[in-house]
Amino acid sequence: MEPEGEPQLLRSLGLRGAVALNMLDMIGVGPFITLPLILAAMGGPQAMLGWILGALLALCDGLVWAELGAAMPEAGGSYTFLRRIYSGADGTRKLGRFLGFLFIFQLTFSAPLSVASGCIGLSQYATYLWPALAEHTAKHVAHFGSYSVGVAVGPATLIAIAAVLVAVFLLYRGLAGLRVVAAVMWCAVMTLIAWILVTGLIHGHIRQAFLFPVGAFTLTPGFFLGLGSAMLIATYDYWGYYNITFLGGEVKDAARTVPRAILISIALVGALYLAMNISVLAVLPWQGIVTVHDFGARQAVISTFMEIAYGPRIGPALGRIAAVLVMVTAFASVFSLLLGYSRIPFAAARDGNYFRIFGKLHRKGFPHISLLVLGTAAICFCFFSLADVIAALVVLRILVQFLMQHVGVIYLRNAQPELKRPFRIWLYPLPPLLAIAGFIYILVERANFQREILGAGVVIVAGIVVYVVRERLGSGGVRST
Image (cartoon, rainbow, N blue to C red):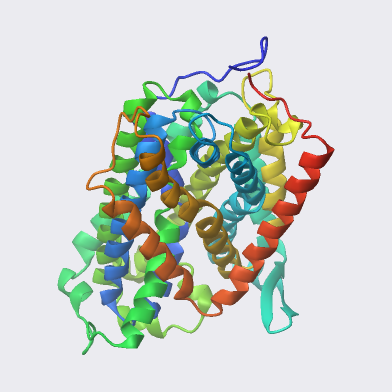
């Protein structure tokens, strides 16, 4: 139980709100800037296979989150899962405490990276509205031996930073007071998607979206390499369906709501992504998108889609409106990410397994220290290129979170068969095994993947050192008893 006299999280979030928050998290700026990258990875509309397989991978992964989230409906998500799985039935094994701490430590990097990716994407669409922003941006590539990292400084960077600051300001209040803000952003997201789908249906030629090049499905090494790259991007775009598990302590009837919210979110977003891709390709021939060498044109593909669909008279104006809606959608994702992730260090600190200051709640009932720290780190990552941010995020999260969690759900079934499981993984153990194989596949199917693995290794080693030193000096935590 929590320390006596401390403010407590309120269970005020129902199924509708849980699905909305998950979908806000999932439908960020990703699908609006990654379509050209996915098409280029496979060289044509067969790249939609990456979206389909990515959805199946998300479903396998989501079933794991659903079982664990229903069995452990507490604030913290993966932290709670890893700590309880690897501590044993009696809670005495130190491995659970260590892995829980390591997860929180890497979250200090991966959560802000995720937030920063949305803010950087938002700023890229801002450059479509005001091209001068890109002209005054200084870009630099820092080299570390055989590896390199892109850094950008300019007006577009300041817009990305401003997005973080506004999100923190809006979240600096209790969950109950955010319903109007979340509702407005939800409407913006759904309006944009509906507009894309209707535009493709009215102004596009659906058959054009399925004009595959010769040999598109020939199973060559290049096909599998391209599929791995496409699935990697699709996986990044799908992530977020588990966001509700981070808010487990604030969900009504969590044992039923959490699994339903996860699975409904995956199904709805998977269908929307596939329909959006078909709509865009029905208007914009894939050959033109793949051969575009100007990345600036690629990153505003939805605005270009609107321009072409509605013609030279009103197309440019509608393209600008689309850019604004994409920016609102990206901000909605940032808002949802910070909301969910800020609860995780709070849960760990209340458990005595992280720094005490993160366990404090604001008088309005939200973890303000955690929110401020993650927001500050996200600002720092806004200076890096989007490609490097996404690459670092994907690799770090797979290695320190997803793989340990999938192995853990299998171990937990064997070690604690008596644990109450309101939801059980369908076709167990196939989903977690397929998810493990899928994540390993996309992990190594990327150019220079060793760079990201090395970076993740540095974070892991640093986390181990901090944990050992902290344990020897005394945790300084506030353990709940």
